[in-house]
Length: 509
Image (cartoon, rainbow, N blue to C red; front, side):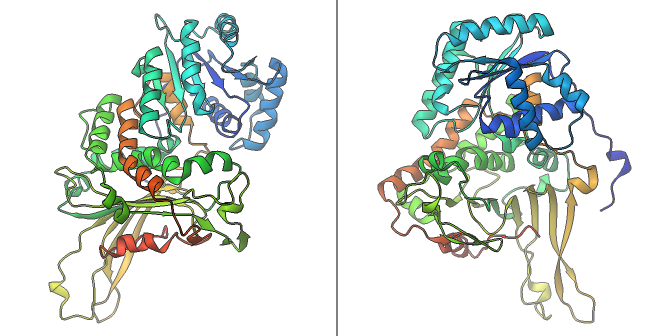
């Protein structure tokens, strides 16, 4: 597909507002792998205000200079591209450090004093982003202590809280955390971040659906047979065994990542692209998902755990042999389910979701499978069946959109072959190396909450998975591990679709 020359220039948007970003948990993996590379990329793209600074907060006793050196060393490993020495030198001079425990009340007056001095030095207008890259148990206490010293008060300036996942571990804990945060900050100050929504293709779902007259009229139960959403990973739990063994695939991926993809795929057109207009429609779609009964959980969900196997020509261990994992663990590393949405657009159109670790391939995609055309025209030809048309939205590792349809093969006989029309972002618009956090951090700085979850959306996601959590807790699995690493998951996941006469799309092509 040839690029449209007139489409190539890309609007860069306005730079972020003057502000200080305070990162709690600044010495952790998330910060060095994602946040600092993303902030540097924003600086390289002129998307950071010149009046910008970062304050790192952690327990380690570091001076500002020691902190800057540590960040510089990490960037050599985790930067997404070449580092401009002059640009980095200017960036690193704006990094500061405050040592202290997150539950230590003495930390917060010290932080307040440091911010006042940085305001004077860098003219950041008293605007602060507080990024909680910490364990979830600190979210509430950090917010409380910030409020106690006035750091969440908004007058002529703004103050924002960025909350990483996991946002609770069930519905009750999510509600409790929402109540905690809303005691100290308004909803408009809270940015519940989901890095999946920083990907261009996820954001493009709205453009694809609502800017193209060829898609929106057929985006409903009359023309769509079913929807598949897959988040397949080849990696295991890596060094997250202690967290993952408590969470599992369902908690880790479904209430947040997958529900965001479901809501963007299923939502009605918003009245504008303002944050609450978009999120109102996402919330409606989530609330329309049928909550399963205990009996339906048994028939419409599948869980699995990987055993040892071969992946990429290498033997890999079973989940139970991974570091920091209970050798008798009953934690699921694979989940599949069939959801139904009770509204006019999607009545009787199943949404099949799956996510898993140590699968044969790594990809995240949304498959829109259309209803088959009538076969009557082909009854006197060698054509035995008609292949379904599919629209595939590729989210990672490559970002793009494919349309699969049938075409006649050359020759005298009527024979059909599958044709894929592919659009790749890299081919058409070019690419810039990024971490997936750039757009989200920039949105925090300009006050755009469109790509961040609202309290009611978080709770709706937990409502949907709550019946599964309850049934699975009452009936622990007896057959784990039930799929080898390097496969596409347990056989029951294939059965889930085959009972309905359907099949998973496993390959990206």
